[in-house]
Amino acid sequence: MTSARSRCGLVRIFARAGGAALILAIAAGATVSTPALARNPLKLPDTQYEPTSWTMVDGWADDDHTAAFEAFTKSCKAILQGPAKRDGSPMLGALYKICEKASVANPQKPGAARVFFEQNFRPIRISPLGTPDGFLTGYYEPIVEGVRAKSEGYEVPLYRKPSNLLPGGRMAVAGAPAPAADEAGKSKGKKKNKHAAKRRLVPFHDRSAIEDGVLAGRDLEICWLKDPIDSFFAQIQGSLRVLLDDGRLMRLNYSAANGHPYYAVGRWLIDRGIVAKEEMSMDRIREWMTRNPKEGDELRRRNKSYVFFRETSLASNEEPIGAQGISLTPGRSIAVDRKLHTYGTPFFISGYLPIEGLTADTWFKRLMIAQDTGGAIIGPARADLYFGAGDEAATVAGRMRHPGRFVMLLPKSLDPSKDEDDDEIPLPRPRPTDFEAVVAATEKATEVKLETAKAETAKPEIRSAAKADAKPEPKAAEKKAEKAAETKKPDTKAKLEAKPDAKANAKSGPESKAESKPKAEATTAAKVDAKATIETKSKTAAKPEAKSGAKSEAKSEAKTETKAKPVAVRHDPPT
Image (cartoon, rainbow, N blue to C red):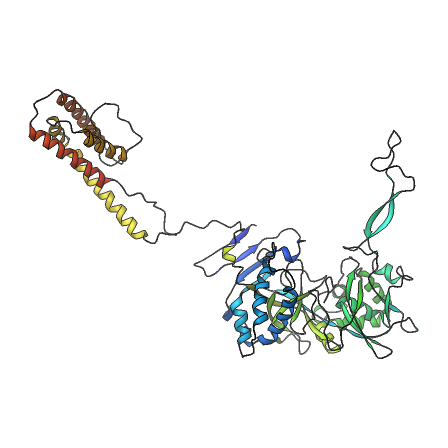
């Protein structure tokens, strides 16, 4: 109902499992002071989230989604009055797009409104960190008797906002003296002025000072009531209807507050054993204050918060205006923490509440819309349910102090799995689609390489003898063999200026050879090949058959080394 109504009332973990379950939790952090418009709904402090499905939301199918859609369109009227692009306001920007769809939708057929919500939102359970439940209270609009001018029996004023009340519950007063002069007789900063005095900001007057008459004589009185208890509860609710002595109805709404913190008078009665916790309600508080007027006055003054009103032009059949600037809907509007949530956000709330009587045995399950706020409504899963105006609504709302489950309807455009600003735990590399084929090819290539190495190291003399009678190949063949040898081990340079064929023979075989004897034989074969190559240069009458045989040998070795080259693959375990 109001923008500051006073009502009683990590590390980041980001887990995915096959695109199914996703749980987000933000550990205890600093006090939130950023407005909801600039806040990501999935980055609230001290909050845990659990995405779910519509079929897993208890009571979702049983609700009147058409009634909820009508309340949602009220919020959309306020949202669509602003700009379409909301930089730094992801939730409000996403709601704007959905509201555009809602403005042209006409869900009159049974189930059409439900389909609209399911197509545009995804359900996410939200609760304080470490607990599955939130907390619910209720509020209403009181109807009291009053007069415009003070008269006998009507001596309790309701004030409009004072002009010297500044944002944050401050006021400016004269106080500090002018800056002291320095040794040269000149004032530091501005010119010297003996009569100048700085004005400083101090907290505004509290309830005790206001009730003692600190604002009297400033023509701030809107009307006068009979009972100070009525005035106290009207300020807690944030709006009221005043039945004037001339038969007219005055509608008053929240205007401002003095900035002092709210004090829960019900908690004071519980802590002293005056009222049992399970019996606490606004009716019990009123009864105790009526029976104990002096103690009741002292208890009210413990709550230093004080609310100022403004007169509205609402008709008798219209509901009060909430903090979003639109009229509330009984049974569909809720007040939330404005520092955490965005007005217009739908919440499906369920829980056993004392609707029909004092016992909490009525299963409440409804889609509600965040359209209001309150000074005592603090936390991610904290809501005040609006029940309407009058005594009956007051009785039901006054009994509400119970746990409840919260399911926030998150616009689908705000996909939590695509949040680029998250400092999330890196995910493993994706598993290759042909992982088994790659492993099989690697194993086969390794086997071929080992068999080739064994064959080459077993007969070094035969290969060396064949090369002793061979004639050097043309430069093209030399370059091809050299390229094959460098591919095998490009970082190693041969110390001998031998032919590439001899170098390749000395270094063929797998790098994993560890036995000393085969290694020594390979080294000896390399030396023999080098010597044979040098001697061959001096021969001018080599046999054609030797030339042909050397050429075949070079081509065969180059081909063998190409087949033995291992496949480059990571041996990472499948994710």
